[in-house]
Length: 282
Image 1 (cartoon, rainbow, N blue to C red):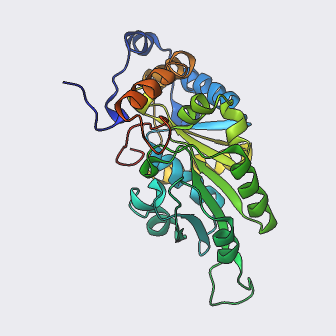
Image 2: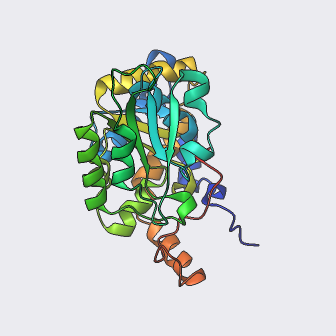
């Protein structure tokens, strides 16, 4: 039997299990787990950001990122088909008092720039309105069949967000699928966002865990939110070790997944770039 429901059903490799057994550990609650530190340094380097933080799941990583960016009482703009809106239990509103404003998602996973501008067209001094503070994109886009957002679009989106004073967060749960599909470094893709989240599980095969990366001050704020959410971990280097193997050994083989997906669905709207649908970011 071949499991085709989702790339979340991948299993850790023998090299991951060996690394997990041998990993030096410390108390990550005190920032003293050397394997976690190595993973965070590697992750930050790969996505071109100054710092990174290891979290239990993509859902928590996105929530920490949103709450680190968006003050209570502001709005976050995101797609109505995005995982962050549809699959993550409304955490930013429930926990952080941040209002979601879903915008129509095009079949290619993009949000119309005119819709983003329209959502920002309110008087910030008018007490009737919650001011937008953050805009989110998803790349690859899960519910749009694994669509990869083009770099020119990402650049235009970032410029527009800057014009309106918005931060940009990229839900890159499958960022490395986008990198492999386009031949572009993950850092170049993530360079059009202020922060990025990506999963170590899914196609990269680690048993669990996600990273959020961005400026040092942002990551410090995200760590505080992680603690608030109960995501502080102790001798978690035993899991981080698998994440290191995932980033060092499993990225390039995503091309095999893409080739197999193209054979299964040769007329896919995403030109063989599908990353297998998943019920959210974990």
